[in-house]
Length: 90
Image 1 (cartoon, rainbow, N blue to C red):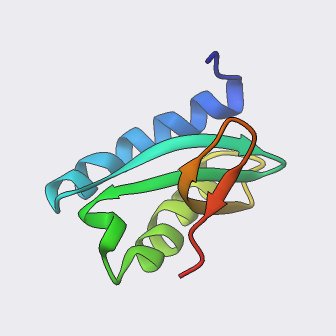
Image 2 (image 1 turned 180 degrees about the vertical axis):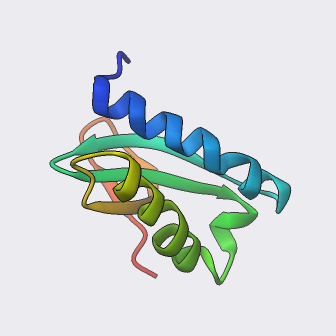
């Protein structure tokens, strides 16, 4: 899948965050971007962590909104099908 300019910026920011998540046994995976919303999948220890929402909103979303123009929301998805994302609504 070829990434557009915004998606390339998003992936670059996520690569900055990944070492911190990996250190704690987790990780983050870029899933997609549409209409200002970034879709990611929290994996490893992050997937079952009680603080995943804090990490996602206070860390990942804040950084993406600051560094990538147009990002307004970040959503964790449980799985991806070819046509849609299934959101994690803890």
